[in-house]
Image (cartoon, rainbow, N blue to C red; front, side):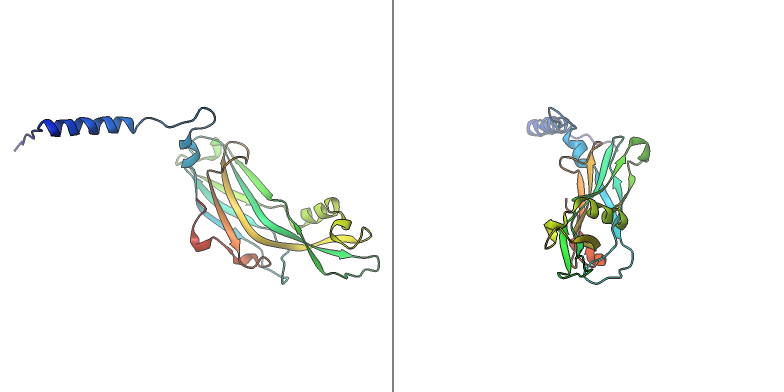
Length: 212
């Protein structure tokens, strides 16, 4: 049986206001320059993990991180994923007599560890793409130390030789940026906090929650 619904004057007015509100909600929100706010906010890191080779040294580790994640909501745009950290290079100062009088010395590491460009052809039909970020290996950082660290800045004097023992990790972050550079505010990020800087197996997302 077909039932007719009648709207009184107030009902008709409410219906008209509802239609107007629904129409307004479809108006796109953007800004004068750069991508729209919708593009910046839609991308997410839906899964992420961090792995290290088994430890062999107490207090510091010779191993660097490999970070994997799945980014979603990428559309058909270009994105940049980045691996950064708050960490220290653990150095050893050796004098001409091959002695190590002061033990290990902590030296702040560079913030940026690795970047990965995600192009539209790497994004599947569901708008997702894998993130695979690998820091430079121990040999790279050992060479970096011998080239960039002045012994006089970390050792008793310039006559010492500086070598790399390993690393200490405080926090390690995976970030996702809109565009082809890791600049500005990331669309999403995940930070692993290491409760023991010398043992990267303790690096975990606090309470399992993301940054944003």
